[in-house]
Length: 78
Figure 1 (cartoon, rainbow, N blue to C red):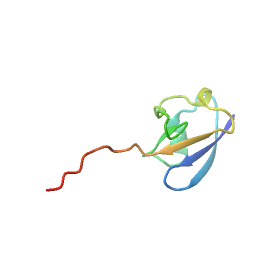
Figure 2: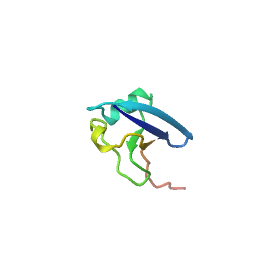
Figure 3: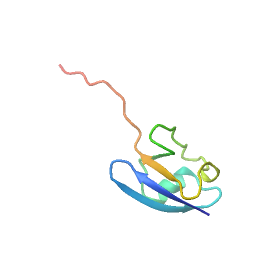
Figure 4: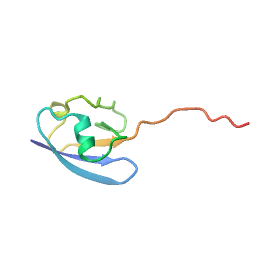
């Protein structure tokens, strides 16, 4: 098992979880009740796919980040 600290963007929360081989990013988000979030290794890193196993991609004790996907758009004022 590995321990991770999940930093929840915009809340200041850091939540600790334990994962085992085969644990997916979606499993972690479900466990933390963060269905609208995505996991990444850092603010400028790509997001893990929900079905992607993260066990071999993170180190024991590592911080990972849960954030919402940025919405990009143009605001038009009339």
